[in-house]
Length: 542
Image 1 (tube, one colour):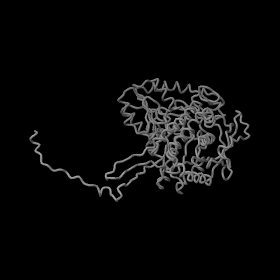
Image 2 (cartoon, helix red, strand yellow):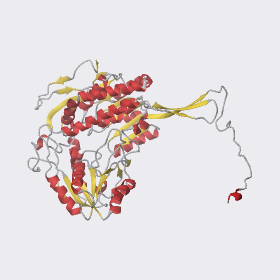
Image 3 (cartoon, helix red, strand yellow):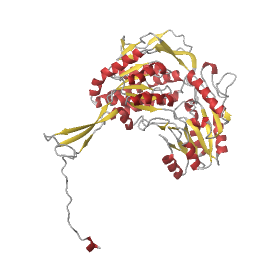
Image 4 (cartoon, one colour):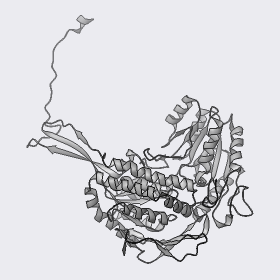
């Protein structure tokens, strides 16, 4: 086994058409590069250019996952005893290294999952911002001094780490989201086993090596590759075996519920950031041009593959037809293609062939519901492509943008998340109806309203059931110092990012320091203060 920092990347014979090298990838366990214990591997391929194989990675077994968990558990005592400011300094080093390697990371992310270069840069910048934010939190991991009700006694509260954290994230934000999870986790003194997204193993391998380059001790963050049904399931199953003290998961609501059940029966903390059917309301007072731009980006940026992407576009009936007309002008002019080859691309391919197939399946909800299709024709091919598609469609997993109008609450497509470039449009009679429709889906992640009526904005932000709300802004977007997460079917109330996430990776420890040299019992030994009874004639003041 080779130490994670002892060698460069190992290249394989690839014959890739774009000339990029094919990487030999490894798990990173206790600072060592390791193959799967049974030698099995899988490939990572560029969804914009299927013939481009980025690398070969271990298909991790249960034994591999357990070895990583044991390494994290062995590293925990030393890491948790490391002063929090020192942990913060290492996290700051990570941020500076990410800045140094940013251009390379961005190109790997775009090549591996097909996002545009601009969007990949945003994802990497989010990881940088997270590191720089939590560097200083290492000096602010505050407890409190509490006054005692008894003399010669001091009371304190401290934040303590939970232990070993299992980290599982989807591949659509493969740099930002794992850093949202692991940076606050290790800042609080925890150690981690990270199951990389199956569709972004090269980027995960690259980021983990950068983390170790920052001075991170071996065993604090351990990386295992593989499928969700394989390595991911082994990591969740380890909760039942007492090997995991925390699971943080970003993905589908159905899988999140399963993880929540496993964690719940073991009284283990779970952070669950799940799906969404995010509503965006357009009111007559809105700036029409701004609202169209926001709805367009919310629906089709990242090919609709954000958990915060627009789901139901709810338009007041007075501007329904006008708004749709303006929106469709933008939709029909959408430029689609590989941003590593072409400029001014709005979105590229689906994240992988699996996501492409799932999207086509989900479109059937709209097709069979009675909604009126305004635009979209499934998968883009040479014989079936919009006028502004750039490139050869069969080289990747590209989809038309889809728009369905006249959607009503009784349709399945109103309630179900469609993960891809598709929006459903709903007509509202007035503000009260629009707010009702915005709350009518089983999800509650992100939401937005476009209005220049301040009372409507106030009533929307106080009446919506969602973890995040944009006013005159799209449903997408987050900053490293704001809480991120949802309610209802979108999560279990925990939050990513900002100071609020510290609650998810630490517990409060209350300390009672008795200085009197004797036993003093709270509530029982407290001296009672008697009321002073004195008769006063207040009538004389009347």
